Structure formats: C-alpha cells, structure tokens
Length: 215
Image (cartoon, rainbow, N blue to C red):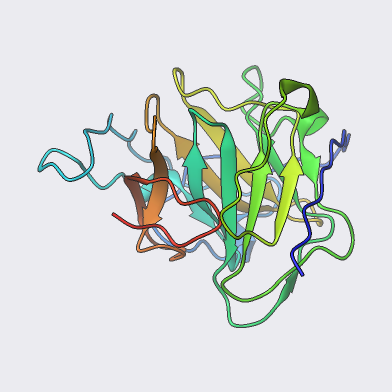
C-alpha cells in the first residue's frame, strides 16, 4: 500500500560533511567521510531543449554517489527531488537526510534538511520524492508512483541553480548533485540517463516523478 508521509523536520547536527566536487562515477565510501575532499570538476553547461542536437548530457563529474540510493531526478521549476533505490535489496533510509547548500559555508544546510523517519524502507527500483518549498507553500506531492513523499523547508532555485546532498546517518555524504541554472522547466526536469545509474550523467528529460527517466 502506498504511504504518503508529510514531514517538516528541522535537524541540527554538529558533524562535518564532505561536500566538494567529484570525478565521474561511484565514489568509494572512504572518499565521502567527513573531512575527505575529492577533486574538483568542470561546471555543467546550460541545457537546450530535449530532442535537439544541442541538448547535451551534463557532466557527471558534478555528482557524488557512494550509495545505491541515488538522487535520480530534479525539478527546479516545480521544486521536487526524486530518489531511487538502484540496488537489488530493500534499503532502510531511516536517519538519512536531504539538504541544499549553505551559500556561506558551501556545506549542507542542516537547519532546513529533511530527515527520513525510522521505517522508511525503499524496495529495489522504488522511488521517494522530496517536495521543496515547505508545508506553507501549498504544493502537493507529485503523484507518479513513488513509495514516499516528504516535505522539505528548503527550496530549489531554478534561476540560480542549487547543490543538493543526500546525507547518511553516520555523517557521510551518500550523494550530491549540482543542479545548474535553468536546467528544467515546464514539463521537463533534470534527470540521470540511463535512469537510476549511479554513474550516469544528467540531462533535460521529460518530468517523470516516481518513475524511470526517459529522454
């Protein structure tokens, strides 16, 4: 049975988080522990419309993925983030957090992070959506077949771009995606192709919250 959970949670932690740019692909867990920097990479370019020759695949080097739970799709215009379990076994996401970037420190903004409660178990190939903008924004969760939906206090700036973090309960950075300015809009989002592949780059795709990404 699908469970739609609304959660607005403020979590304050004192742990340090690794949040620098990384090279393509899956980063070993030792590279994502607090205080373990990774190498910088180039900045993604502004997208053209899908289906045109000028529509690029974005630089996967802007992403860190050290977990089978991956940030799979982002809508800056509609302010939501999709996670998917890319593994072959169910994963307990209790204690995991999703946060945006603190503009002063460059680290995850923990004061506005959303924390998944105990019992948030995501089956293989199942999806979870985080709705940005806070409960007061009046935005409902997009209904595309996800197993869970949580509300976050932070927003996603489509105009200026954003950096989004998936933080493990032990304080490590389990995932990170740099969302470029104007990377989505209307019926389009910014998603991994191939969908759910931790090593995949991002490009403008048809918005499919709670479902696999399609070009």
